[in-house]
Image: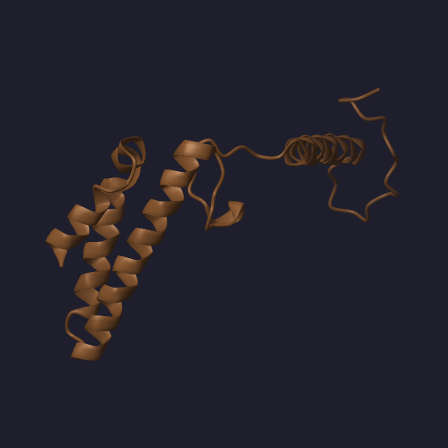
Length: 133
């Protein structure tokens, strides 16, 4: 089965095979070790599923390398190294960071406005933020 898997792996485009081939082989060997102690029906199902998956993936990658779109796999399941965060996620991360910084500044100003005593604390006076005017 390993020889057949390696031969089918050669059908993938060379760039894809160079980037993902070793990882695919390692995952296959790990899965094979888990299933190889099971009954014959489970092993046969595993082999057929892996061969079908390799052929489907090879066809999809060949179409993608020729035409630039995924034939069989939706975009969210395709393995691509050029993945980028959407612009909205970047803006959201910036807003969250700004909120955290403002909360830290507000906590520091509240902490500075309260004298340290063991008696009952006076009311908290709002202090202007030091980070943003």
